[in-house]
Length: 99
Image (cartoon, rainbow, N blue to C red; front, side, top):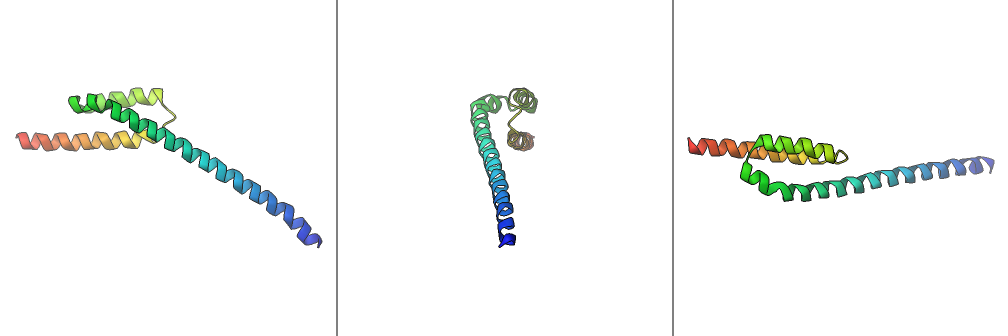
């Protein structure tokens, strides 16, 4: 009986720690999801500028300014890098078609 009574509080403590970790990870996941959605909306609002410019330097400048304003959004870098790479591929393709 004493062995069981000693094990119960340890199990409860472990469950509480586990629940706290789950809540922490869940809150981080929610925050990063909201942040990436905001970033996607911002990308869409700036798409017209980049579609008309087709300029990677403008993209890089925007990235630098964007990083200073929203340093909490870690997800945005991969989105912007992907966009910049797609623009580079598209401009290379257009250059080949012109020549």
